[in-house]
Amino acid sequence: MNHDYQRDISGCGLTGVISKKKRMIGGDVIVRSLCLMNDRGNGLGAGFAAYGIYPEFRDFYALHIMYDDESSQRTCEEYIRNEYHVEKAEDIPTRPVKTIAISPRVVRYFVKPLRERMEGGIGEDDFVVRTVMRINSEIEGAYIFSSGKNMGAFKGVGTPSEIAEFFRIEEYEGYIWTGHTRFPTNTPGWWGGAHPFTLLDWSIVHNGEISSYGINKRYLEMYGYKLTLLTDTEVAAYLLDLLIRRHGLDIPTACTVLASPFWKDVDYMDEEEKEAITLLRLTYGSALLNGPFAILFGHSKGLVGLNDRIKLRPLVAATKDDMVFIASEEAAIREICKEPDRVWAPRAGEPVIVALED
Amino acid sequence: MYTIDAKGMYYRDLNRLVREAISKGEKDLLLKNVNGQYYIGDGIRAKDVRITIEGVPGNDLAAFMDGPTIIVKGNAQDNIGNTMNSGKIVVEGHAGDVLGYGMRGGKLHILGDVGYRVGIHMKGYRRQVPVIIAGGRAGDFLGEYMAGGVLILLGLDANGKPIAGDYIGTGMHGGVIFIRGDVDVRRCGAEVGVMEPDENDRKLLKTYLEEYCKDFGLNLDEVMAKEFKKLVPVSLRPYGNLYAY
Image 1 (cartoon, rainbow over the protein chains, first blue to last red):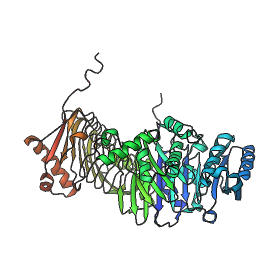
Image 2: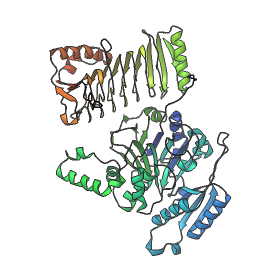
Image 3: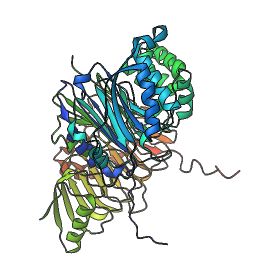
Image 4: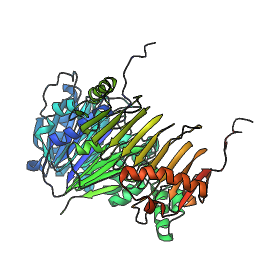
């Protein structure tokens, strides 16, 4: 047996940055932060989400779609043109990367639902969610991996620097960025399985494994969500959409659902809090995320970092003026912000919630 | 002093340079512009070597280390001193999770807060007594599965917040934890007994804290002025009969 081998023991890595004043941050910044944690991943997935990148199309849903082949593209485009006004359709700009041998076609569409297709008083957001679920589950080889307004996800199989080069990330400017490098442990490393996972303007990057996936999946299916991307993190994106957009929970409450206090701690709470948390746990027991996780979720109004309840994955936060940084490692923050005003490790289950200033 | 500028350097290159310098007889190393490089000081066996780190060293600092002293002039990350045998690490800032995992000797002094699972499965035997001292607050699972050694938590700037988190000493079956301030028994593992330190304990504490205070320029009398609680396992082999029937 050969013992002379080198192996890096890794987990996923994530990083995010937000300017509360909506100052634009170049894509090169998040790329530098993520590349510092290159060795946390193993080259089987990396990606970025950015907010504020399509100001000229801010009123249109930006659909990013990956296609296995020409026929999936034809079928999908026919479907989209039937349901939407397409303001613009174009290939997502990419550049060839030597080490990325195979990649899907990546195309983006700036669209608005056609009024006459919106039967039964369905809202635009619900209409788009229905489209995402339908295309991802019914059109072979076509996957919508981004569907929000004035935001976009870029992801694929490769290291952070490869995916950044492929999607020309440094050419975008946004006021919120998240990034992820993947070390898939129990699901396939494929283009659709890279992070971020998104729905409308929710985007999520995750380090860990959601062992409640089966329960969460069945729960989401009751509300019409279809889990098609073969990766546990997908449930978190759809749970945010369900809890916050459709059920109207505020962000702190949604975080309490995802990482509820343990019953033994509920016992110590005062009566009012005890009653509220008990109700939440009983109502949303199937939305609880179990297992180790550190997640970052971005949305059009802010950025949130959240850990599982016993902190089985790392998460560090820092502030500098109107900027907030959250990452798996402090070094990833210091790579893009040498002297933060404050650096701290968020407690287990206690979200770091950052909102844009009005 | 032998200086290495680690700016933008890959961790393997940096650690190779450190090893080469030590094998050539360098005793005093300064690593400048460190940011996130993993595995610094790992497995190095040398008694009188000193490595000073400017910047934030990456995870797994000083794993399996046997002898050297590492001074971190700022914050450090996760997994420091895994299975470390001897030597010393001084962190002049805060540090992350899982510090001193299976540590079997040497000292880990941290000025600020520490994360979750600090001192997990530390062990000791006769003269091998690993010591971890943290000046700030700690996350949950302090001293989880602890089998030996000494863990001291000071909570110097706690401002009334709880010093230690939940599940203190869960699975603890050896060693001792000292916490400067009150301990909520509901937050301790079932195996843990909370008691007042006796005269011998206070002597021991003073010895350890004297060195700690010297490292950071703190006032020993002020640190010792507050009451400590002593946490020890109340059952030596709680699962001794687990497979007996």
